[in-house]
Picture (cartoon, rainbow, N blue to C red):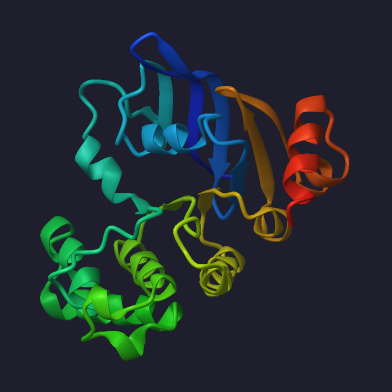
Length: 246
């Protein structure tokens, strides 16, 4: 399997507080990897370190055989290869849906407006938002905004899609529409790294599940292994607590 991102001995501290302690893991091409764990376990910080929104304190992030934390690495170029979907959508409120999906392509990838529009429409179609191209974000529901955010990230045609709790800001009835889109993406072979508290998604859609606890990877394995036969007591404890709420 082709390795897209490999994380070695990654550490991150904020002052005296060590949030990530010696993290090792990788994401392979075409794989859906879900990261689960309690709030404060370091899941979102790990994602933010991978796309360099946070600068790691130590360790390596290997992308296509090169450590992107080396000083001579083109971080701007690397970032274009990662699509990021946030909890809070982060759409441009002054731009309509189509322009939200075009602006990055034109500015960063130097695509022509015509080409960018074609690519944007392809992905808006994919997430079921093609009818809303002239709408501004304020006219959309939370679920629709998140689907536009997914289309915008896909329009950059990244090597891997990163999702940071993409459903946590949504009303319960809108969660399903976003998870359905993500499930379809996973099935179509798009590489995805997903921080989520949606255990059903992690169980059904992931190829691999990573359980984080107190800044370390406590356990990782297939969904079947993690959910049906976890090896670690703290994984069992977390799942017992979480699944009893569903």
